[in-house]
Length: 247
Ligand SMILES: [Fe+2]
Image (cartoon, rainbow, N blue to C red; front, side):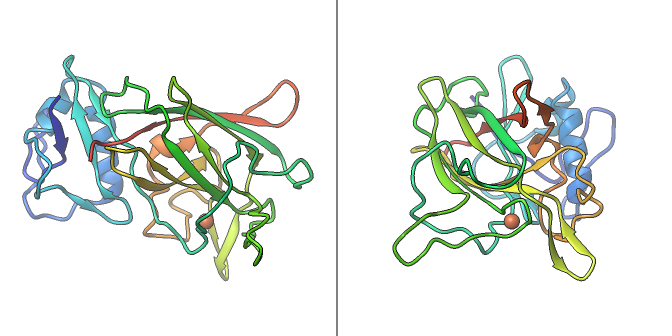
């Protein structure tokens, strides 16, 4: 299965081109990838394959990694995002990372972790999740190792599926008048695949780009902006497919 890193200098199906060595705006890159995934244009876009150098470095997001599938479709790995200062190791394994008493709108997120063929489930993939509370505050585990409020690790099942039972995090300020869109942080890992550290956003958030105060974050990637729907029993629901690139 050929895997490709987006290489400057590749030409586009419609005649546009990426000039070698020229800076490419991250947003423009994601637009190009969106077009590429729609069909044959992707084959021209990903003209060179391999794991080595030449991949395009994208600010805040690392390399954009993709696989050309036998039918010509593009399987794109989940992109990276900023780690941020609030990750703490040692979170417990649990799907319910927000206690029943946690204030906020309940949020049920589920999805699947797939290999870079966008088909093979990655059983046992671990998602290390942490987030702010409904008011936008992060909480530290105490000295005794608990309670890891709004933190937890979930493991993908035999079919690659996973779920997180939580609350919708709040927006938070990073400075006067500077806000971040609501997000969950997650580190996804599986043996034999590249660990991805990223953030998950929600459609309709007023602080998504161009209003995200974090200009190096990857909140402009539509593959990580989750549409939320109201659940019949109350609360919100959303789903996300995560794809890991081979190590
Ligand atoms: Fe954050």
